[in-house]
Length: 581
Image (tube, rainbow, N blue to C red; front, side):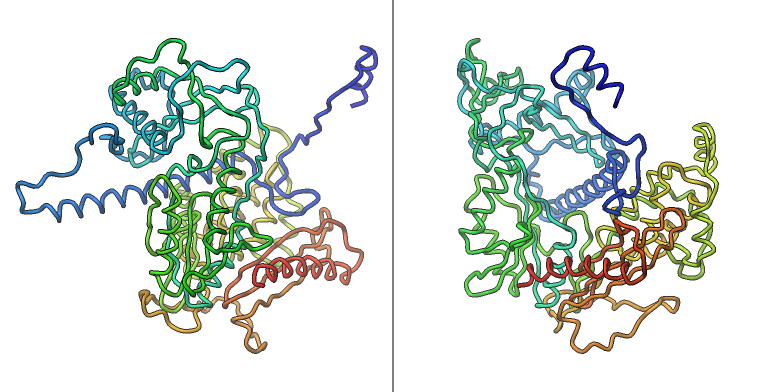
């Protein structure tokens, strides 16, 4: 930094821009004391979640085909509804003849033009343009006004894991492309703790939650603040003539005015959030103060809870018909029909079991994908229930004082010897830990410290967590109902394994009130001597809030460490109280 400043002074420069960054990827934030996740780790998590989504879409497609064949069986005059509808209706979803592949692929138009199935992708483009047109996205072609805010149409082509071909048109809203942003761009995302509390309340109050999804949600919201135009591309011109039946667009008609929010523009997420929030409040729902994605209200005198994550909705009520009425009311405010998804069994990438006696949250499908990718590493059969990480002081000391590779060559040799990417597995552990597997939090945060340069013992300890998750793949969090909900199926009650640790809670009437526990160690990490805080809050018999983190300062006494932990717990309690009140 001193050298850089010296150079600037010698050049008589007035301003200098310094970008300060670390040269290492720290697994634990040096100040906050919580696990950090990086783009390469998020990409692996996203890959697993995308495969799960495609598996579900394929199951839905197969169910639809079975229903059609059952309906038309024995009727030789019946025709399967697979023909393309005439314009101006959108053509049907484009399905590939290619068998389902393990990983989804992305293509450029240049690559697709060389393939035999380009016509399928092209039809997908026309379908997308029809959908936008039906939502009132574009004006008729017109000359681009002088000095206007104009962006390029950008096409994304993705081959999904089940073989579905997706052609999506967005705009290139990068600042490098000259996008003008005058409005707000921040949009709220659903907090994992708030999501767990929603399901705990569903169980506690005897509710049933059904799902809904909005197609092309951003296009339902108003346009960005600065008037936006898109340059017309060849695909639009061809669609305008061949499928809309219009005259050829003259050369001077090189743009369309954008009337709605469009994916790719920085303001679009905020515009959609503002739009759907107004709709929900007009219908009588009120968002909580500190979780704008969680709502409650009365529909025809019945209490309703509403949870949203972008365009995915969960609506909970005592009466399923009441929840469906709310979805229909939202549908009346949309230009594209809202999809009814029925009783929720998966929401926001988490598996949900709504049963007669409880609501259970798991990450079973996600863990199946993770374990499938590392199956060759998990070769030893386990006869007893394992633990995520051995807690005896001798083993922990070995983790902290293990000799690590000194050179890049040694790092690569160790990685090759162990047969997996340590950094990748640490990233894969973050998702279930954050969602509904609090028992691995202490182990994950401990091993994430060594993400930059792990030793062999760290590799083996990480495999131990995978072994634990493989053995307990269906475990999760249970929230208990006060009374059986007879409209939901009966499922087996959980069985406490003989190796499980358990504690007796003598506090009366705690299951249906918020209560919790907090503790800390004192400087047990021999490397940096920071203490670890552990907090867990319960509602309806299951954990709704939990945190395991290193304290941001080195405590001078065990009393100081515990007061610091209690302070963190108090903040968490205030957050949950604000939601419940």
